[in-house]
Length: 328
Image 1 (cartoon, rainbow, N blue to C red):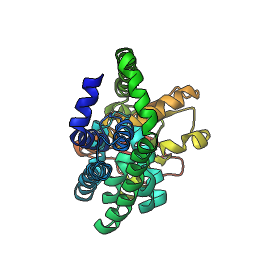
Image 2: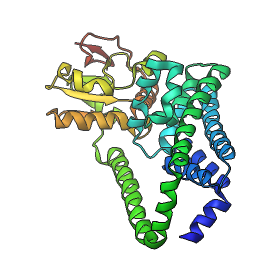
Image 3: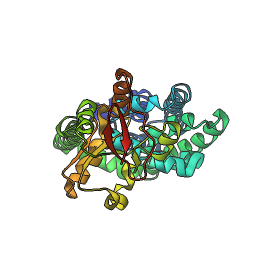
């Protein structure tokens, strides 16, 4: 254990920078514990307090600027990259958009303390067009608050930390094994949940939906994307818009006597898959996520000699008439 502490003390700044940067870009690395530990070491005179704060702040801001620039230059497509990096299911990452769009630039002040928002806030700031000076000001304040609270907590309780280190020198092996099991179990559960949403929820393809329409079977398209995303990209014209976050309040609006095809525009159809799984638990048996989401619908349209170009009906239900689908 003493060798481990010696390593942390010797390479403390580099280790602190690497862990915080990795956590801020979306990797499942816990940064708060090392922030607190660095503050405690500063309190014990083993690390310089201001260097610790500076390194942690630099790592945080650098990661945030990278995501901000990606959001500003690549738009909403960067959220797909974020979903692939983050261990949270894609739908969980995207669900934080509502909080950000509601509070705007001010959400950057507390973003580091909100699970899911910490990584997604910087690219969203770039996507919605927040200027560089405004972003740096609010993100800088949020970074100072987050880093200061973590390092400050460790600094204040550095005496107790020293006692804990003395105890861990005797029980370090057991604690290390238990901690490894807990972290491994957490990561495994998150990955299993993501895999379940990606592969175990039955999908329906656009070709299968087209066959239903040809047989005059009514189909209701449900757009579960967030409102801001549908404003920039209206999606399927005939779809009924019910964001996934609103399903708990609005699921009673959905007809239970016809096929419900849910779609989104995120990797693995995660938002629509999670919404479909939730609706099935509520008793909706004819509900499926659309495989490939909005992109699959567009690709299918382009492949057709006579593409479906319906208007938006009141109830979002389609029936087929010849080569063109019209609403009933």
